Structures are given as structure tokens and as C-alpha cells.
Image (cartoon, rainbow, N blue to C red; front, side):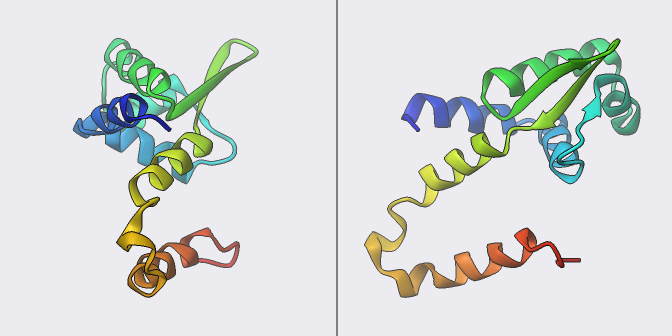
Length: 115
């Protein structure tokens, strides 16, 4: 990931509604959600939600596909992974012991048996 892409993704997440949308979509992986359902759940007008979803999509954090008459949005986990790796790639100047607590805290959320 390049600096400009990381800045775009971080900028997209630096707004309360967009951060809420992204976190909601992560919780609904892999099925995703229709734009209207996202708007209703977060109590945001649909036209405003469309603008937020567009910003997240352009930042590489959300993807979408048409299913019948609905557009289903889902978190782009590859984009999230690229952003996370960009942020921690040079973590602790390669000193694995210093990065171990970060890795240990992230690992449980990704297990299938995690709460």
C-alpha cells in the first residue's frame, strides 16, 4: 500500500458515521448488508448513507455487488489487511518481542470459536 492509499483509507474512517458503517459491515461478513438496512440500523438518511458508502468504497474499505434489486455492501477485508499491514509493517524496527502483544491481541478475534 502506498502512502496516498493509506491516507485515503484513514481519512475515510476519520468520520464517525463512516467508522460505524465499516465496523457494522465487518460484523456482517461475509454476507454483507443492503444499503437501506445499513441506513436504518444506523439511523442515517439513505442519500447521506450513499455518500458515506461511496467514500468508503473509493478508499478501498468497502465493496459492493448487485443482488437482484439491492446493492449489497460488505467490508473489503483485503483493504483492511493492507491498511493494517501498512501501519505495522515496520513495527518495533523488526523486534518481534515488542510486537508480540499486538499480534496476541489481534489473534483471538479472528478464530472461528472466538466469542
